[in-house]
Length: 220
Image 1 (spheres, rainbow, N blue to C red):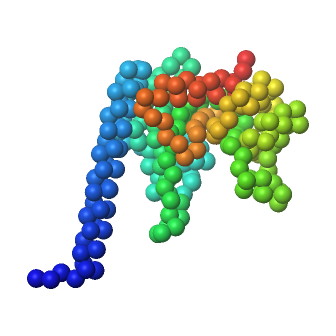
Image 2 (image 1 turned 90 degrees about the vertical axis):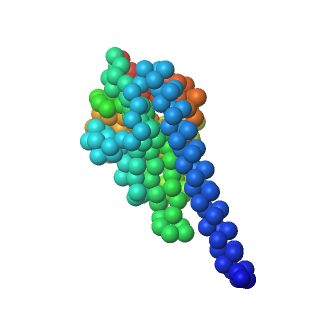
Image 3 (image 1 turned 90 degrees about the horizontal axis):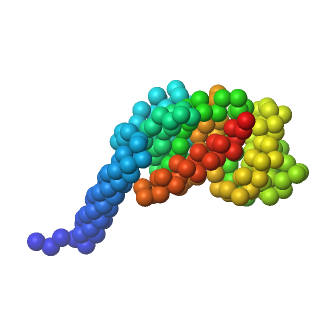
């Protein structure tokens, strides 16, 4: 029996998609297992699936309200002398249909770890941010630290309090540490590199640098 070429092509496409999905699932499973192993070595408890509502109750960060189809998973949790810390993968989707895109990043969350800090968002400054400034988009700049101001977008409702939180030492730290996003809401802090996932073998370094970011903001 002769099978039309169109049908053969369609079957080939379906087969390719199925294989791709299986490969991705296998890679995600391997990542989860590697993160669990690395986390246990560092003293973290591991949960393959995290409750996003519970995370939002701990810290309703702006990133948790981006896009749709949100999910937190591969969560490592540990209690330290400085308070609780949670490290997890977080994904969300923007747009829909052919125009949809899924963003994934690894976030370090410090529930209550930023008590005394005002609410703010610090993120790498991009071209669209620079364009937005021309139309009144808020960006708190520091004349004393032009490198910081050119690398980062800083926003917060209480500008005076945000400026006070960013001491000369804090500004100098971020000048040497580009690429971080920091979100503070009601004393809880989220630290991540937007749209980037930490490799399991780098989880120790990632948590150390995230802690350094927090220490740069919480000064005696």
